[in-house]
Image 1 (tube, rainbow, N blue to C red):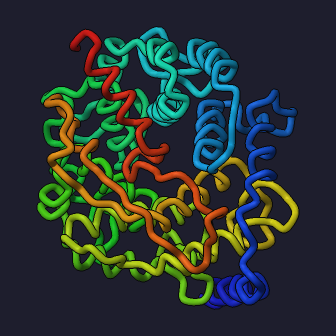
Image 2 (cartoon, rainbow, N blue to C red; image 1 turned 120 degrees about the vertical axis):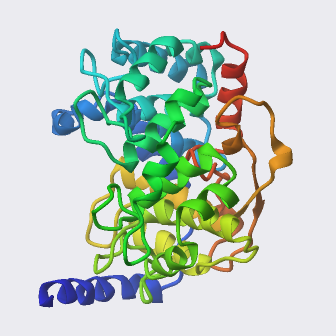
Length: 392
């Protein structure tokens, strides 16, 4: 307990100088350069991420797309992504983390989000939808859950990844979703939060997965209300925002981390919708200030977990996504329905701007889909294309 408390005291001490100084603007130019380097050939120091190549595509492309005024050569990137995605696609369906690697839901999700983010229909067709469906069905468990890969772990993360991919590519069937809502409903813990399993610790990232999966399955006002004690969940979420730092932690007695700006920030969109609350349940100003003041590094590109940490592509992507979550308010509107295929509920969201005193117009980023974590309109475009393809 003392070690945990001391770490919290140290973190507050490290953050205070940044929070007490004038809030710096979003350093779009340097962040853009940082992310573009991630799309170039990487040095041997990145060998530990060999199985995460699709994630690097997604983190960098998504971060670039979120920053206003950033332009990239879509044609060149589309061709490169098309070649890389083809090399990562497994003969049995799904995508691996690199050439010749076994298919896994995490890189499959990442590469499909990267494809959606670019928005080039010529790259959409790389995905073998029929084989993808068969592979996902091979991961479906008898109790409604999903394995992350063949013979892999079963958790809420896998359910979200499978349903996200299925909804975006329009390959969702009744057989795929049978029992999944019931499986996810058993993940709420005694403290109000949601875990990845039926008997594990509540966790901000895994709570996002469970909430988003349920919001793909149906109207969140119904699916979330049926599955969880929402007042208890809202209370747990409120304890994720740190009183001094202003950012979010992922678990009880854990430190603030910039990546939870997205994972927890997006959860608020779903919970506010399910509860019918039109005002914010979290302090958007404090979150924005934490990202701009503490997650940026003066005169350097990339965003980070917290002061004293180094920037990386993961935190850059999700800090920018969290900034978007702070800058926009989300509502669910069933009149936005565009098709009748399963998964259509996840495309009925609307968003509106929120003005923050802690951020200027130059700090504004693009709006982002609260379930798919890609810029607004990108998921809808891929879905519209998929609906027009041959039915599974």
